[in-house]
Image 1 (cartoon, rainbow, N blue to C red):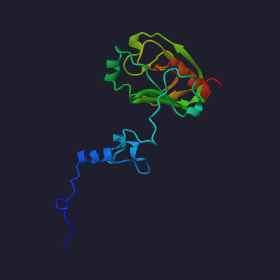
Image 2 (tube, rainbow, N blue to C red; image 1 turned 90 degrees about the horizontal axis):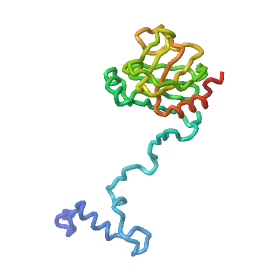
Image 3 (cartoon, rainbow, N blue to C red; image 1 turned 30 degrees about the vertical axis):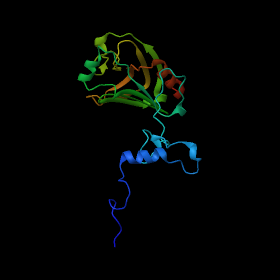
Image 4 (tube, helix red, strand yellow; image 1 turned 180 degrees about the vertical axis):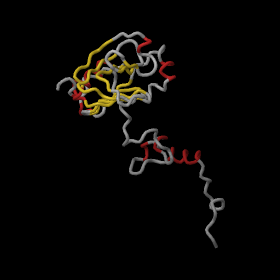
Length: 204
């Protein structure tokens, strides 16, 4: 005679509600009888919202002390003025692809489809500037016809002007064009300046 099926075995069908009732009345292994029911979050089949061994991604708070190169790559998001945001979006620039990175001896600016990368040691100075005329910063990168400096900006309030010892190329239609300076508009200007200084900018 074969083994009885579930229906004929005399056992109650296993359902989520039944499993919860059993968990409520079952003490934890190795514990006293009166230790209490199994917490809902620890019941079989329940997965916590976050794995215990995977910490939440940490974001550097604005102005949270002096950054150090040992902190790893430091990302500085751009500040987006509400009035300039639509013009930036027309050229494919948005908060997800407009930022600067200080990573050891490397400094990189991403601005939509454009970018510029140079060693931190190539930076001779960094100066807080602004405010700017909105038409000189809105939209795509702006090239200065006077000194060939380039501006990656999403705010007219203020930014940082960075001078380079050796002019660096950017991803522009003119591949041989190199820029002796660039202006960026990070949201955390003070933290950005501190990161450049800690990485050795202007010390060479």
